[in-house]
Image (cartoon, rainbow, N blue to C red; front, top):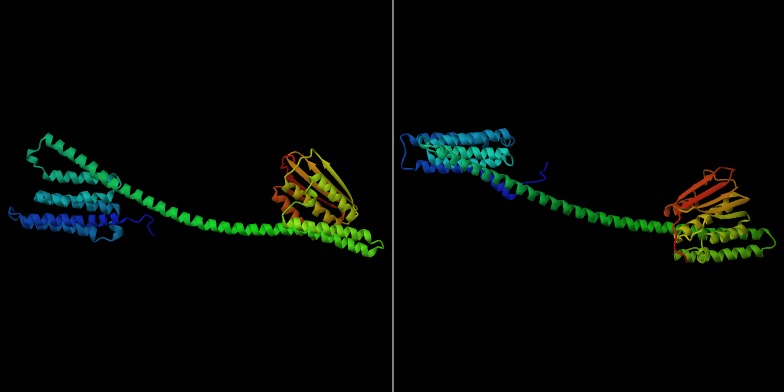
Length: 402
């Protein structure tokens, strides 16, 4: 598994330096010791033996161990204690090996950031100053001075290790945050492009549905009415009335086609509000369909927003067209109710009702989509032989007086 916070170049270089510090300090102290003109009897062989012991410990307890074992906390503590022990032996043998003891300060970084860091620095300082003292001349003042020095070194060096690691961790978090931010920006750009594409597709689909509804609610209904009148004209001697009605429907359908292209309101709503437009629609429909239609408006009439009025008008128009085409009804009723926060439109008939095959037509789907498009509810109640009731409930969104 990849490390989400890989070490920086500085950390890698410092880690390599910590690995070689014991070798460098031990070699430096050995070179100075063996070249020193003042050597006690048998000093060099003893120096070489102790140095060999220290070198063997470094190799066997750390360098030659497998990486997974070398990096364990128990192994690190054991290795550190061995280095301090061998440095103490060498320093008691020859003071120059205090150089080797200094490597303990660097090895203390292996414990950072934790309380073990301060313990390692304190132990190194104690060995360093303890082996350098002439214990035959030690007094309380000297002991207190060395304790103070050890305390200052512990706080300074240990704190420096921890502070350096904290800074590096913060920089890693900053780098990771920048990387995450860049990734998020790229993902947001891709998502924005995707959303724009979806919005364009949705807009095209909505426009197609709108045009389909407009064509169905205007041209298709007008053409159906023209066909009905022409067929009636074929069956009677007095054809002029039916032909005149067909011509009127054709002219209205042409006007509606032009309005649909321009996305304007139905012509019945151009100079009137919804109750008057429904009354005009009912009058024309009764003459064309030959079905008795009762219109009733209840509640306090208020001018509604164009979208609400167009929606209810188209629902009424489609519902009445379905009555004329499919219901075989003798009577129908249309009720528009203003109830304050909502407006209800009900169209019912005493026809044959809707069976399972006719309940999913385009007209019903168009009405349902229109009503839901303005935040309303659309319901159909019907049973074979018991007629049909269509109900649309929409919010009473108002406009100012015109």
